[in-house]
Image (cartoon, rainbow, N blue to C red):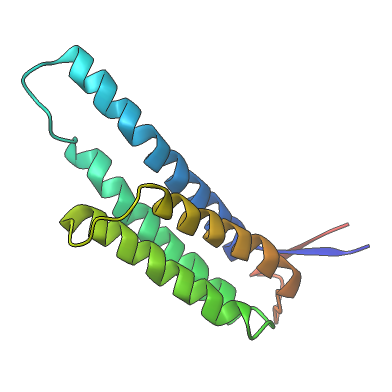
Length: 134
């Protein structure tokens, strides 16, 4: 049995999972920071930029995954979900709408799930975008 895995889907899965871990770790970072110093309460700049790094990696993963997918439903689903993740993270920075904390976890988890599901539909013209196992 041959199993085809899309490299861009694997990158998307990794980026979305790391994004979720980053979101989960943020409250613990604040606890550690509060316990260690009493003068500063701002999030470190490097920690804030990680959100944008994950969004950029996820953007290119979604772009390449949709380019090489044969499933016409998964293509808009990946883009809609990425746009939702972008909107949730942007909203978190600007605080325009008060959203529940779990929404970003759900959106990131959906992106992981969509990339996992899309791995069955990789349509490569060569072996540069997909790897074959089995």
